[in-house]
Amino acid sequence: MYAKRNYSFWMTFNWSRKPFLIGLIYSVVVIGLLHILELKFTIPWQPVGVIGIAVAFYLGFKNNSSYDRTWEARKIYGGIVNDSRSLGAAVIAFIQGEKDKAVKKELIYRHIAWLTALRHQLRLGRTWEHSENRLNGLYAPTICEDYEEKLHKELKNYLTEQEIDEVNKKSNRATQILKCQSVRFQDLKDQGYFDDFRHMEFHNLITNLYAGQGKAERIKNFPFPRQYASTALWLTFVFCALVPFGLYGLFKGNIWSESICVVMSAVIVWIYFLMEKIGDYSENPFEGTYNDVPITSISIAIEIDLREMIDDQNIPRPVEVNNGFLM
Image: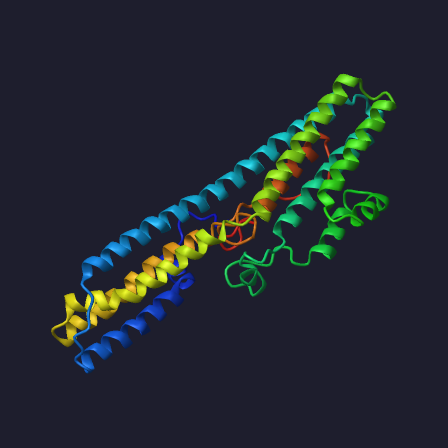
């Protein structure tokens, strides 16, 4: 997530300079040929303007839908924050006694392991995402393409080797960690650490965490419908292809006005493709680019809260903004 007050103009332009340059070259070619060959072929601006309005409405729909996905993802992680704090408070309140500090630490650490596995899984690339931008460092750093090695290394801080071996055999490690947590709650209830009522409270919290994970996976694994995304792109291409022909009829007359026509055509092409790119890069709130939900930062903040609840000494530092980027 980009965490500064505003994107600078040059940062925005650098991100979207390719459509502008292509639009400029295309406009120079079209208007240059019309001028040199003295062709009479132009398109009245009125129908081109109508197409532009239709495309703008469609891009607005796409951007609103993309924003809804991002905001829903943030609300889902807000729910995970609340459920995680509730779990920590329940562990502290329901398991009493100084001798039970090790049990509290075990339960808290296993929950942190779940948060770690979940955020790693959500950062894995999908075919419809912009993973190439992370891999080449163009618009965002590499988050966790080295999934297997990095996750195993981090889980060793929270789980036993036996648990790690067990979850590594499964395809969805976060799901299996919550299962281990649920089984452990049952073992503690059988050992008399708490009664049936408190056990049911723990079970409800596990259910809520599974619900949060499932909602996040729904957004991650189901893309913004490709027919809507593709239609917006191709309609933008069609409109931008007509722009120089429509503007030439308004500006033709002398070399200076036609030069302004070239620049105006390029600016219009840039604006429309910029709107299209904003929606395109907001569709996937867990992909790890500048417009995503900062789940690493949120997860570390939860970990800090939980460790402080058990007076743990190894409290990590909050994730800091790096060149405007918050992971």
